[in-house]
Length: 478
Ligand SMILES: NC(=O)c1ccc[n+]([C@@H]2O[C@H](COP(=O)([O-])OP(=O)(O)OC[C@H]3O[C@@H](n4cnc5c(N)ncnc54)[C@H](O)[C@@H]3O)[C@@H](O)[C@H]2O)c1
Image (cartoon, rainbow, N blue to C red):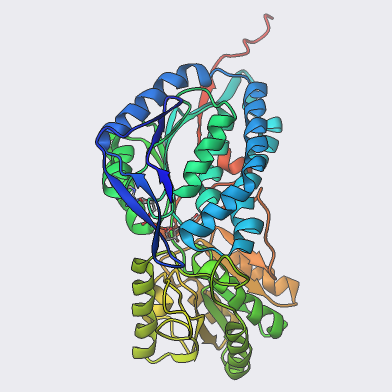
């Protein structure tokens, strides 16, 4: 049982102003795995004031001092790597192997990337007599979700620290263990008091208090589009910058000349990874209509080959994060059946032999139309919807016919055709023939998927203001 009931404010582990706790449930066995405190606006106020005070000095630190700090965080993270992976498996059910090789790895990798970017980042640019200076924006409010918990924390905290900002973090209350360990890492690394603060709690109380606090200069939010809109509304009266990384319903266009065995199998596996709980999962697979039967056979085999079970064992897929998510996914699978899609694999109910835990069957629907609920709504579960297209233009139109625009995927062999399709897709990231794994590539969405860009050097700009110093270089006397 983890007792994670302290907050971290002004360099100290402190009790919440009003004691109130929340049990954290392990989704693999539905048992209480630990508890956190649920903060209030008063805790946020204390943290924001500590961050404001610290900003005066931390914003003036040298690039070398901040690089040194990131190096110490990396060293401490490496020491706690196993703890981090275990915590993620326990709090949100990712299989141990996924937590080790991806979930925990991303937290470390974003910190290393921030360090690398910092070493060559251009904070100053001279344009004739004018000097442009990039300065830290101030105190940042960071609100993160549960699905890739430390990935999202690190891709905000590391660049914010790198540029000299101070911050208040609120991790997801559903999966708060990794955020606590992250905080222990930062404390051990000697982050100066007040620079980084942790307040746990829920969205309507702590999230809203962060969004509206006058001492917080910007909010970087990752989560659902619903909550992202609330954050922006609450932030509006204080005119703070709001960076939103929101939901997705990403199209995966498989062109007629693709290697179907590999593209369809890869598409299904990508959705099943992390139990479908990735904002950029390729959940709408678009295939030539004439080849639907062939695709169904491949997709069925891929889904049925996915092993589901105890995330501490060897299963490829663990549970989904919570009862709320489990019930939502069940309803959407039922909607697919009711609206006439062809159920190819999986379906409602738990997989055989798994009576406890929020386990969902790896599910594939075919003959889906883009009007169906399962093609429109972000399911955030292991459910693939396969749609047939008659022409490549139609595939692009249907691919873009969504309120989201986070990611898109194209596969085929004709490079010119693939690039043409990729250029027409309205999404922040387009992956070609399974391309990925570039931590320097900006990550963020078009349309209702958000307005920010995280990762690499783009991630730095979220936390910077630009100052123009006019007449900085006076003209030489004639
Ligand atoms: N675009 C991206 O980079 C990205 C990455 C991962 C997840 N996501 C999205 O996140 C969602 C899943 O995560 P979730 O269920 O934790 O999302 P969520 O919106 O319920 O919660 C995300 C965070 O926001 C907080 N929150 C909730 N309501 C709030 C409010 N009114 N004001 C302020 N904060 C509030 C939560 O407490 C949590 O910390 C999915 O929609 C997914 O697509 C997006």
